[in-house]
Image (cartoon, rainbow, N blue to C red; front, side, top):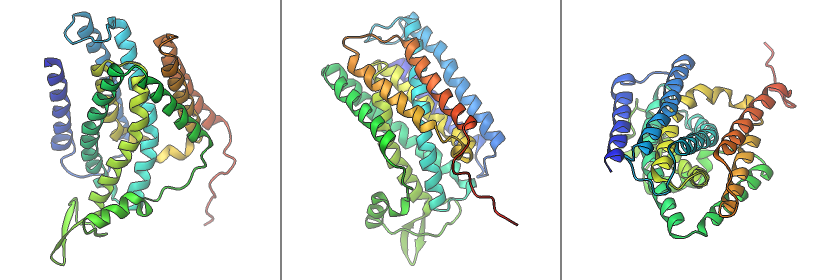
Length: 319
């Protein structure tokens, strides 16, 4: 439990430095700044694999699945890359939510900061619940695998429809719970309107982002549990990927339309992980193969988006 406490304290420290020091004053996150912070978080996450090796090598943490240090490192990196790749969908939805509620760019980082805090809590609960289910019921892994295959099939065959947060059930339900104002007042989440406390678009965007993240976690958590049921590896890889999501959002949100084929990469990853879960009791798929499938799938989606011409290029406005 000491290792868990140190890791959580480390995360809290970084979050406190993020909001209290590096981003104390609301400002627009430029591409260069986002690239620097994305590099920092990715380097930190990959460097943490060395800590994983040390912890498992010296027996400083519980090892319920009896992993060798090198295997633990491979499982950690694979889990991290799965969560990072599946977060691409989160980035698209977050961009739509911010646009729909006209959230100024300089306040978007603060909304994402509090969104990350909520995501950490909900993900932790879902991870420990999922690990407990797998450890108690062997057959639940087949349910998770089938769910991932269904999700991959639905993603492949489902026609894309434009997500409108203001027409969503979540937003309609929120309006029934408390008054909602469409006016902004700096970075305030609530304002007084005719003597009544009302939620600003910042708070509405925050809640919808939290709820959509929970929905996305229904895919990503089972996917990581297909790699390992070790709670610390699952938790640390997931949380470090989530922490990098904010800077990654500001880095790639403006380029999402260029990655037209990345969804097919996610379909392949989800389908592969689903099959791996279903076969896990009979066939052992090596971690290097899982890592290779994820890397090749992502690279293929990006390369295809760059090389293959867009059949429906955006119209060029005439002056």
